[in-house]
Length: 267
Image 1: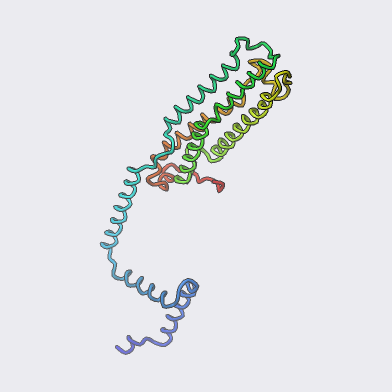
Image 2: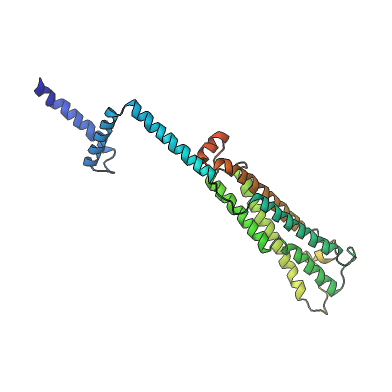
């Protein structure tokens, strides 16, 4: 009897060997048979000697470690490059300065609707119109835009979603911001040659230069569009930074709780 237990039948032994080799065939390209046999023996050992108490202790340890990790991340949030309230103050400052310069264009000489017919008045009007566009191209404005866009990109990378906005809307806002900035630069460059016209020549007011016909000829549509999209971007930045405080400790749990949709591959 003992000999039969120690030495199983040849058919049974061969069937076990075939089963082992069949299982090893799936992982043969990743490890040797000796490594596979050792891991398999360890697995069966732990499965036989681990009891329910040990599993509960391990599970509670993992839960405790996860709680500590989440709490540590909640108490040490990522500091944005620009605080939402600071961004709001800077945007108000830029908006005020741009509107102040618009008022200077329309009421500079007290004759806003009087046509500009002399070289001096046309050049002065061109300088004032160009200063309006430059109000949104100063280093403070460019740094503010760069910081807000960088914070938005970091938030999307951390959270894995664009919530509370659809990713298509975020992409549309950024594209509109670039288009508005390019449009302001185009108008600025179109007015630049007026400053180089000799004093004895009256510049021709055609195309983009028709904005210099009188003080109210320029509607500053490009500047208004640039300001509007900057205000929209500032509100988007503030909302995302508010969401970041809730999502950063555990981004995956945030997506599950808020039922967010993952962004498209372009992000």
